[in-house]
Length: 113
Image 1 (cartoon, rainbow, N blue to C red):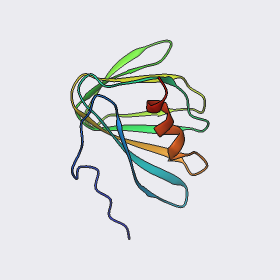
Image 2: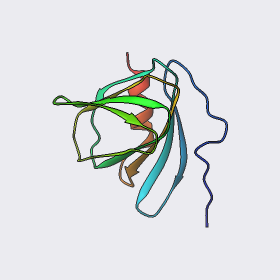
Image 3: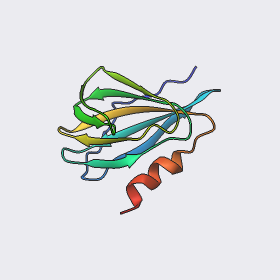
């Protein structure tokens, strides 16, 4: 058994703070803390992903729609589905990636201008 904490010592900055939580035999779990006003530009994942909003409020956008996510909501994306995120409040997100995906790929999203 592994116990992972999504709520321990969150850090809210203007740029998203990305921390690996752990891995299972089939997935990688990541915590993303976004301070109010933080933005992740449009991007896509090579495999399906799940975004769960643990706390706060974010605007989740695709080329066709926008949705204001509230705490407790989960969004599921197919592989290569474009999306962006904007934090309208300090927010904690749990991101579930495929085992074949890379945490570094997610970190690179905030490093590029």
